[in-house]
Length: 314
Picture 1: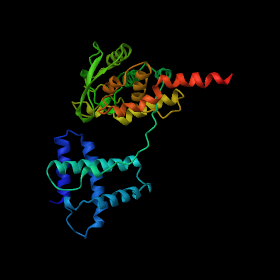
Picture 2: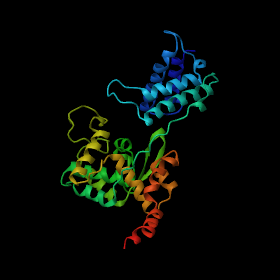
Picture 3: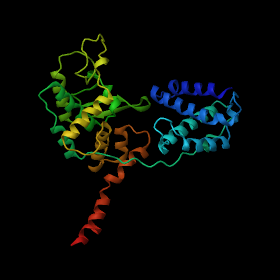
Picture 4: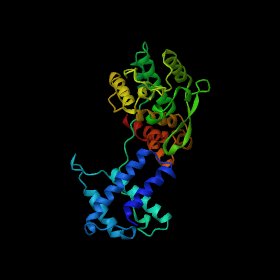
């Protein structure tokens, strides 16, 4: 069978059997299309590439070309992280072939390159307070913006999860609710009383009956859409809102919605929460993802510094 047909079958299985999002499936499709494009030159023009044609040598050449790849638009090579995404997609495809009993390259031969860990940017509690202090709360928009920032910091939500919330999603009396995160996995979100009170204040200021929790107040309100999704705030809009108040607060860090999620995790760990609990609250599938915070929240490191460095300066 042509490998292109099998790739299409694999992408369908990602969406239907694995429950991956449409965006993830699209990305896998792009990565595997690039894989085919880069290995085609190793075969006669017009030849049908079969799974059994994939060899360690084909893999070696693919990795070399991927490392040298120029997108012809920005004239930049692919980062190690982006190369990893291509190889993860290829390895997933090879595992799919093996599961179907189709002979091809052994998935274990696809090693991932070492990618430099991204630096975690977070806000300390006093910086979050400075951010909130810049929000005028004498308008519905101001009440909305304050509720957005408090909910991101109090609940540790991803921005996509926040955007998808409806008014009836949140139980303000219990101060907890469920969200559906990556991989369509549900997890509980807990918020403090202050955040619940400010959400209630924002919702009380609204005169509409639209279901979306957070609305774009500048949108055309005459568009006929009973779902109200035409006014639902987008991730990009929320990012602009947060960056606006970060500038007003004089915060020089690059602040995004994900910065507040990092801040949520960091604050928990600095106050003694255990790593497994933080993993569950963030919805991380692998604890290794949560461990990016440990080096900045380890109180023992500060104790070592104070004991063996600070006191020697007298």
